Structures are given as structure tokens and as C-alpha cells.
Length: 318
Image (cartoon, rainbow, N blue to C red; front, side):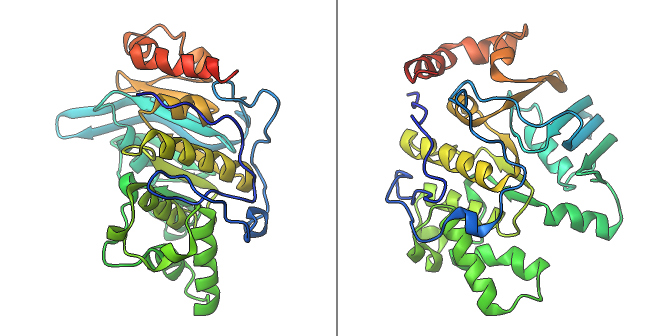
């Protein structure tokens, strides 16, 4: 069943709490604006509606630049001469069939996978550099939400969120670190009492929000999301989409979002990059991608689910 995109923007200073459905009362005592001053985020406009989100940023101001990428595992070539630009301040949706290397591309950008050929720069820094300071710059500027949160099962939510702070900011005293951890948990829309729970005590939606809180712990300029709505019910998925959009517009980070969820693409993405035939076929607003002449693109956007998503967008008044 296809879920309907949200009908409006939530209040910037009131992220929704998560429950089993991903929906609940707002947290009113911690405005997002107190957490970090917005810098690069795109402002909402009268046309900033599901399926009609404007392009933001510029090709002269790029967060990620990939050129001539070749990824190979044994005899299997995953990427061949792949090029990709991610503009600073945009939400880029990355789609493609199974085996097209979406996660491999993300891991290559993060420096977790070394490609056979090609170059990758992140905010002007070589992602393949052996220089420790260069690697640290990318790590400090990147937050990652893996599928299902990828939390440490033996640590509480608060302890999970504190891991990057302990790793990269040992100079922060315990009291300040605890305050920052609680703030990130609230930013992710979780209730205060979630901080002391283990991952096994949380619903699927709450685990994803806990993973998001950890991804935000270093105030990154670049956020990577790998299938963030997979496994969520329609209400929870729509609420999570809205949370990402609200945070991005308030905090100004760039989002690299891998997803199969058509509703997510229509609801929050500025542009869509399609992976097929070992490369990026097109990287453009969804209105242009829908018209791209390629069998997989046409089946994906104009098959039964694609038509249902388009109908939902039409019914929402996009």
C-alpha cells in the first residue's frame, strides 16, 4: 500500500516524538535553532510541495564530486566510469535496481571502500587520501544512518549517541557530553526516557531515530541515509521523511539518501540520481527523471507503485 506524503511542514522547533507508528506528541522544550545555527539549508517556498521540491545549490558549490569511478570485486565490475555531483545543501535521492552499487557508492564516498579507479572529493578533500588529517576532516563532517540504525546492542541509546563524541572530542567533559547527547536525542524526535533504553527495547521506528541522533552527534555538514524508511509502516515512514526535511531545512546539511521508497523521493528530494548500467544515468529533479528514456526508469516511475505515488501527490495538491 502506498502512503500519502505529509500535507504540510511541521513546526521547525517541534520535532515529533517517535512511537511504534513514528507519530506522537511534539517535544517543545528544545528548539532546533538553539542546537545549531542554520547555514546552508534551502528555504521552503510556495512551490516546496511533495513532488515539486525546487533545486537548490549550484554546480559551482558542490559537497561531493565523483569522477570516473570504477568499483570492482573480483571479476564483478559494479561501477564503470561513474560521475556524480552532489550540491551543497540539497537532499539527493539515490535509486537503482538491486546490485547497481548504491551502498558501494556510499561506502566509497565515506572512504570505507577503495575503488579500482576514479576520484572522489568531499568538501574539497580527497576521500581516498592516506593523510590522517584529511580523513579526519571527512569523518567529522559526515554522519551516517545505516539500515535499521546499526546500533550497538549492548549500549543504551544515550551511550550509542555518545560514541562519536567520545571518539572525536575527548576534550569535552562528561556533563557537557551528556547534555549534547540528550539534545541530539530530542532533535531526532525521541522522548527523554528513550535515552536509557537498549535497542532491543525500542520499536523499529525508534531505533532508526536513535541511529539518526547518533549520526547528528557531531553536527555534520553531510548526512548519509541508507534506506531510512525501510521496514516502517506508512505513517511512521511519512513522519520520518518529514523529520529529515525539517532538520535539513533548520540545520542546513547536505543529504545523500539511498532509498527504494517512491513516496520519500516525491516528498523530500530536490534531485534524483539513478544508478543503472554501472553508472549514473541521470541526476535531475524528479519531473525530469520521470521522462528519462530508459527501461528501468520507466518501469520504476510508471509501474503500478509509481502511478500510485503520482496519484497521491496529485491528491495532495502538489
